[in-house]
Amino acid sequence: ETLGMHRWTGTGIAVSGIVAAILVQRAQQNRILLRFILAGLAAAIIFQSYWGAEMSLGPNHMGM
Image 1 (cartoon, rainbow, N blue to C red):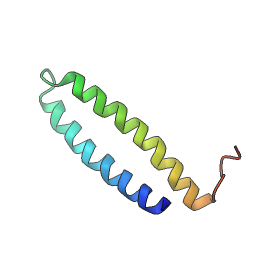
Image 2: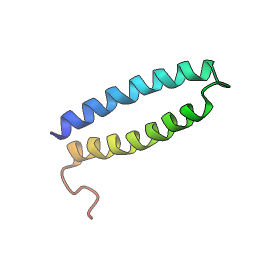
Image 3: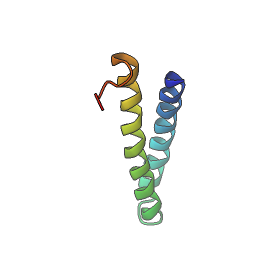
């Protein structure tokens, strides 16, 4: 399950990054949408890194 979430989050990050790069070309028209995409990318990267660490270091790797 963790591998699946990690894999599909990574795919979503890659696709969103491509969309963000296209929006940068049209910077003045879609500025607010670009900011939402970048905020979503930042959140997705945080979750992806957590799941990656959980796979390599084991469950409860943060000791919480």
